[in-house]
Length: 160
Image 1 (cartoon, rainbow, N blue to C red):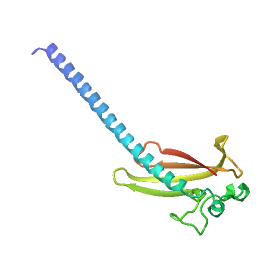
Image 2: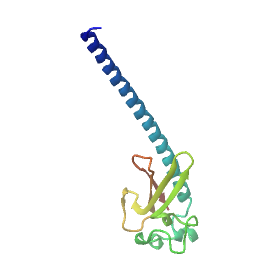
Image 3: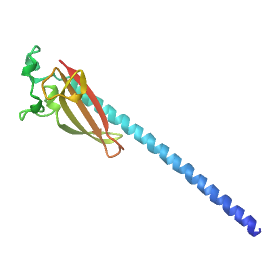
Image 4: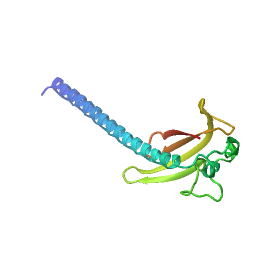
């Protein structure tokens, strides 16, 4: 084998090595994306489960005992959240979940951290927090995990 042939063989081996590396890189990225998709689906399921639980609660503490309570009797926007006498899982109304944090363990995807925020919104501008009582509350659920690139954010609106 001459020097030129040896160079051609070495060049072919380098090209083959680069091709194998690129195939492996693509396969690893594909597996990472599949894992991410699975974690996103699990996080969404955990968040939806939390929303289902919260949405089953009364709109406000006053509507728990009086369905026709006036807006002026609703919890002040500055006092949303659980009272000192309330503890999870015995919250009785929607806004008790304001600033609620918990961790949910799933068998396949590990731990998910959940953070809930509740505020009043005007139905005409539902993405803007209202500083006054209204008949619509917005629930924002943030689900994060060490395995997620970005947290999953879910929003739910409840009107009375």
